[in-house]
Structure formats: structure tokens, C-alpha cells
Length: 79
Image 1: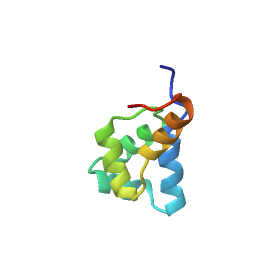
Image 2: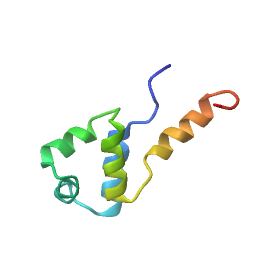
Image 3: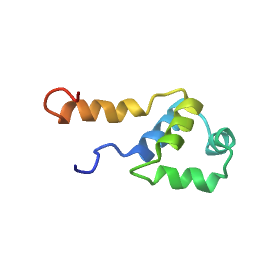
């Protein structure tokens, strides 16, 4: 299976900016330091538990980005 076309770090950064929140705000929500947040922005993949925490903090379903890509790349039903 090929690499995902979703750059999750950029998507998170863009959503954070769109919502008008600061890196400091997100770091407080996640209980980490700002350096970790900047590192997240540079990632093209992310652990699901971390993505869930970010999705909750930003009230956005980032998993949907991958579901949309999967639906467009997999012939037929996944079941």
C-alpha cells in the first residue's frame, strides 16, 4: 500500500490557524510542550491515539481525511 496523500501535520496546523488558536493553546489541551506541537506539524503520519486527542481538542474529525482518501482509492467494498 502506498503512502497516504494526506499530510496530517499540515492539516492539523491549518485547522489550528483556521480556528484562531495558538500553538500554546493546543499544547495545553494535549498536556505537552510547544516543541511537540511544532513536531506534529512536520509529520506526514501520526499515531491514532494522538490523532484522537487532537481531533477532540480541535473538535474536528481528522480521521475523515483518511476515510475520504481510502474511499477514492479502493475498488469495491472494504468488507
